[in-house]
Image (cartoon, rainbow, N blue to C red; front, top):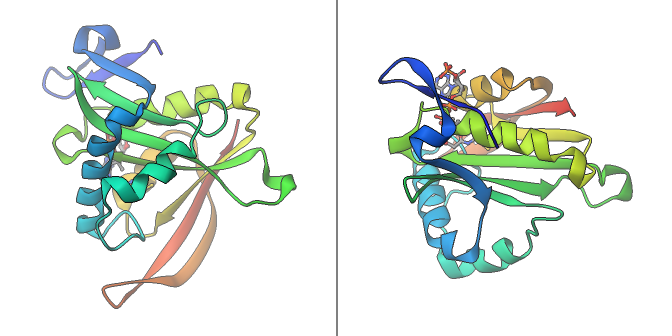
Length: 182
Ligand SMILES: CC(C)(COP(=O)(O)OP(=O)(O)OC[C@H]1O[C@@H](n2cnc3c(N)ncnc32)[C@H](O)[C@@H]1OP(=O)(O)O)[C@@H](O)C(=O)NCCC(=O)NCCS
């Protein structure tokens, strides 16, 4: 997808092509990198309700259940390195929710604040119509300020608050629902 990349070092947007960034559908060979990035986020305790690290083998079935034609997994690749990923997930199994998906995304710590999260989210929004998706939601811990800011910057609004429904290391955490129609 064409676009610009906000380069924080030089302070000005650069053409995406000039920075070696590629947003593409994930392939199974990307799974180890996807799992590494996910496990680092699990350890941070801020972004996911998954509390134990996952293994590559345990995620293989999850990966294969995502088809590019229905629920893609996208990766952001920078100079050949997988720097982040985004997944589409069925929101609820009932037919009426078929056009609604939950988005999750994770950027490797060393690649954060370079516009990759924004790029992945924009790509997901751009693909939604061809996937017959009309509504996107993100389920985000209330204390996950970077993610809340990212989703807001991409035009999502807070549609819901489920107070104190998660326990992370015995601490009650709110779950917020961010959404946007496309
Ligand atoms: C949230 C996350 C995906 C953001 O990715 P990123 O590539 O660093 O974000 P970007 O550089 O594209 O930032 C886009 C906008 O998001 C907001 N943002 C991102 N990180 C932020 C932070 N640490 N603090 C405040 N705002 C932040 C800003 O509005 C930013 O725009 P700006 O840089 O022009 O100010 C990343 O921090 C991450 O992987 N966190 C752990 C996983 C997670 O929380 N996932 C969401 C749950 S599904």
